[in-house]
Image (tube, rainbow, N blue to C red; front, side, top):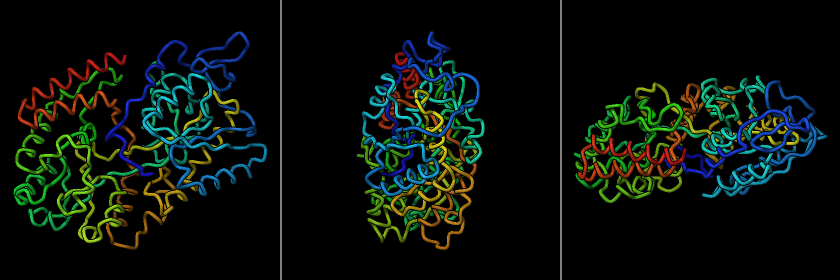
Length: 456
């Protein structure tokens, strides 16, 4: 398992169908119970008022592809929770996390069999929140925010059926974003590794220098814009979608066409391998061969290089990914959420908070088998992240990401794969010289709008 920057290739899950009849939080039924997403639930799980109840009974906890590598850790967390609450028991299940994860989660929700505590990504949480299947933590537990980095908590919201932003998730582990680069190749191109650019266009200017120095022997980066859309636009504070997510707005910002013009120029001048325009390969292989100057922005990439190409690792440097107009970085956390359909919601919420507390987050992030970062303030202040004794690339990356996450937000644009591919396709046409940047952006927005309209 690797923590990934999820904005790169978010998958559109079939959860939009949850907007059908029966979704949303409703009032009481004839029996005196209430409903959540069309499922009959305890009236204390929905509506106003803090969640109450004893921590007892059985709950099911579902993770995503973690049992193989981290069974000992999670079994230990469960055992500690059950020891503290002798009347409660936790059954752990682990979803493989493949391409049909969303569909299976939707099916569970519609069948009123959603696990009590669930590990979800942002698209899944967004859909389940809109349909009313998750506890509104802002109402049911107003103190839930306390452990988390304030910026992360504030931005970890999803929209309910009325379009209101609500807290239905606890931020869990996250990755980070940084520049990784071959210092030798940068120096050959006259780029100072000690002075990373502060804007995306500044980074593109460095790419151009590498293209001129490399002359086809090595490159700056990969060409396929799927790795950069909408992540670059988010960092530039370009609004890709409207506030309600129902229409595309990126063409309204002139900087979008400027961004595409840069991509066209860089591709033409040889900053990117020509055969990588439609390739789904990330920079890992070519970087490890010394053929690409800039590697992945994922901190775990540094460890990958260390394990697979020691000679290149010795030349690898890390720096801050340009903050650009946004002014800070964005994280893509995994979340822990509690089902509003839980029959033991008080127990489920208590376990969710226990799992995501500072002690357990810190313990897991110290596991040498994983490259992830915590979302609690106390965890990020731990000496493990702050008192880095080594000056090797991985140690520097760990400290850099831990520091940037203190002001990071979780505000990232979620695009369905269909919408992302439509936008990327038009940018690729511009890079091939088949359309002007302005026309490509205009056509991309029109195609995105069509898909968004179809999705409702």
